[in-house]
Picture 1 (cartoon, rainbow, N blue to C red):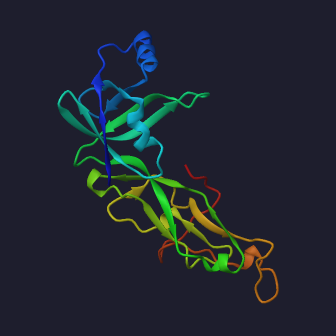
Picture 2: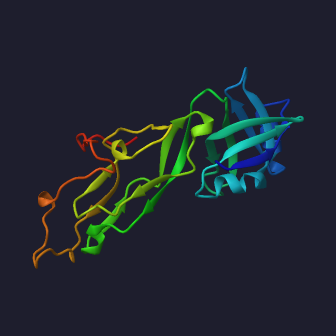
Picture 3: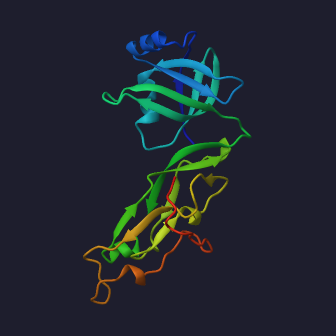
Length: 213
């Protein structure tokens, strides 16, 4: 997985006045968790451009007082009106300790249902995965080629290598829905006539009523 470097400066004071002064100077207050104790620092707002305003997933190398701390983004707060970054939380990476992060979903192929006039609906643009740092994927690839109208691909049916999903197995990632133009043999295909499929054989979908996290 790609990594972005952020130059930081330790914060000696974490009060409201200090935080306001940082933001007035276009600096972002940050915290790194996961170490012996939370580590407070600040960084220039522009340093987060390649981390926040991108569809790609990245780890982070925080350079602080001559040391480099590997981490992942855990939470980010934006101003409700200006969208300026107000605060960022990171989690320190350890080689043998699993971590949770969001990675993008990339759809490949052209489904049979779409060719027949159906509409592809993607429920998740990103999925939360859990893995040790070395196994964190850059993206989750979902091949929709086999999907017919009414078919769905579930989280539990996606093949993983070295990581797991932090979502219910029956959460629908992508589905092909009926459209007015969808025809089969001169007649509109009804939803209850279609089979449900998953990305990998042998993965049976659970009840769809359970909502995705």
